[in-house]
Amino acid sequence: MKRLLVAVVTLVGCAHQPAPAQLIEARQAYGQMGQVMPADGEAARATLAEAEREYVDNGDSLRTRDLAYAASRRIDLAKSHVRTARHQQQVAALEREAAQLKQSAPAVEVAVAPPGVDGAAVSEATPPVKTEPEVAPAASEPRVAVQGRTGSLDAPSRRPSLRPPTVGEPLSVFAESREAEDGTLLTIPASLLFTPGSAELSDGAQARLAKVADAAGDGKGTVLVTAYTDNQGSDNKKLSTDRAKAVRDALVGHGVSEARLEVKGAGDANPRADNSTPEGRATNRRVEILLPKN
Image (cartoon, rainbow, N blue to C red; front, top):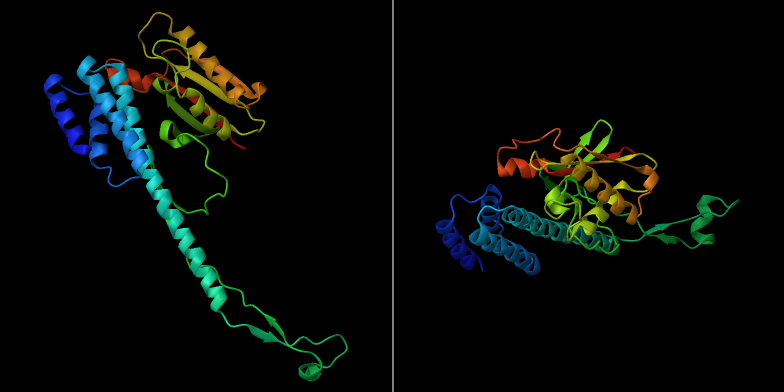
């Protein structure tokens, strides 16, 4: 599979120069992906191949960059699944070891004196009671390095949940998260939520916003949804407002109280990157969701 992609990349390099940064990043990430679960590897390969075909056909288009970005996130997700599986194996091994220690530990006979009976006569008056010694927990819990887009956090691992996993990609795959003074600020590229140039939610947007709704929970604090555009177009204020409202309506559909939601269309204000480049404009087209502190 990787040889086929290398051939495609070679042909692409001859057709267009230069490739967008997102596509270059996706190629490099795929080449360094390593061993992953077959289904994850195939999904990453297929998405990157689609990005390469789009690049051959249309060059550095918005769809090329979006597909390349999606391929990179699928590669990140594949690596995350491998780390999770390894962690679960470590937890299972620790639990098996604890069970074996408990089974092999000798029983301790304890003589219990009934009320009013002298302890010296217990051995004759009362049969000993056998109790199992407590097994001390493992000396140290494994630690998992959690890598995000903004850096890495080395944190103690947690026992995996017994509930079945939620279908869809994790929030960290498509949303940049950082702590703000008023809560947690999630930033999602507009290309992952909307069809180009409109406020219509794209395929996959509902699943992503369902994850945001889960993160918002059922608290009482205000959830602020702010949409931004680049500096292209004639009515960016209206487009950004319509997009913020579309996100609000989706969150309501996923269980967030409408009374908690506040929307704002910021147009091309507060750009995060230079609008003179395609990459910069793609960065500026975004939705920011501020989740209040609980």
